Image (cartoon, rainbow, N blue to C red; front, side, top):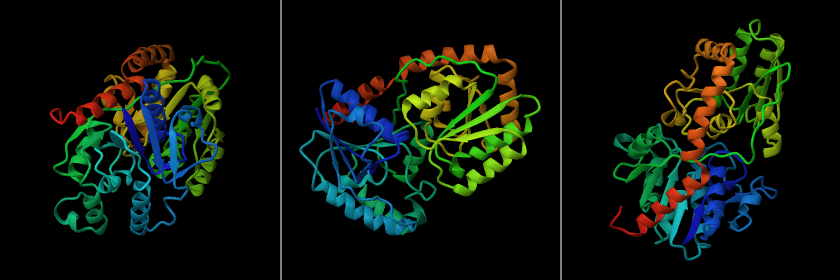
Amino acid sequence: MDIGIVNPELIYPRGAEKQICKLSYHLNKMGHDVTIYTFEKEKNYLFDDLLENTDIISLNRRWIVNNLFFLNHFRWYYLIKKLSTKLKKHDVINVHNHPAQWISKFTEIPVIWMCNEPYRQQIPNQGIGKLYPANLMDSNLSLGVDLILAISPVIKQAVEKKYPGKKVITVGSGVDLEREIKYVENNYFDSIFVGPIHPQKRPLDIVMAFSQIKDKIPNIRLHFVGNVLYPHLKKEMQKKAFDNNIKIFFYGTISNEKLYELYEIADIAVFVPESEPWGIFPLETTLAGIPTIISDQCGIKNILSKDFPVVETGNISQLTIKILEIKENYVESVNKTTKISKMLSEKYSWENYSKKLLDIFNNVLDKNKF
């Protein structure tokens, strides 16, 4: 099969971009042709090794140039239309992050949208929301999408509200590790978080929770991996850690090997964001055997066992209790994590995810199936 994949950027090596690159790699490995179309691509991209056999067509144009989101819509329209002129003859087109689905307006090729999170989902394309200028534009340009794939049941509901009348199915995503993670013991209690330093990810909650239990857990070290999008938030986290004599480290974007070195010293992983459609990082740490805490707004909670450590988003007291429970019952926590990791490796590998999407592509081409 010949597959075109569209995403606005190949810049940040997490989330949807990792999903795209892993999908491309496994589709290639299965003997299929893949071309990725994007507005911009990092020159020395962390996942270039996964894309060795994939054609990349980039406009080399920034896709966000200001904070006035509606003005960006007109820029995106221009870019997606220009990108559509470069489309080769494909059997299907798999689009990912908004506004990639707009390419359906400019092609007759079947378009399948892997929607990890609908854009501006708080303003549905229904009722008075239909009159919202951005929604009018988005609704019109998304009409040609043949099928929408939701990453989780929560996102499926959001997509159905945003795009009423469209066929939506839940497919999940994938996860794997490049190599085995072997725990390295030291004299610290190391916590790790991977994601941008952004209020939506609530990294300050992690610092606040550990600050409340600093006297019960000696030698705490907090590791934050990801771009600092809000410098004032980083300063607030640093001050809180300093005031409580907690060591805190910020790494920015790092290689997989450096990340795995941090996984090897991690005693716990904490990921408690708002409105998170999936959560590749906590799945990776679970695969690595690291006891992991997530918020109740993480999409992955639907695929994990009921006794997996989940806390209410923003509930610092609940988070401190969960951290202490893991610390005080550490061997049991590791054993539980190991059991869950076996299930993840069997059901949610990137290879299985790629095979699932390939079946869906074939079913869409066989119009009797969808």
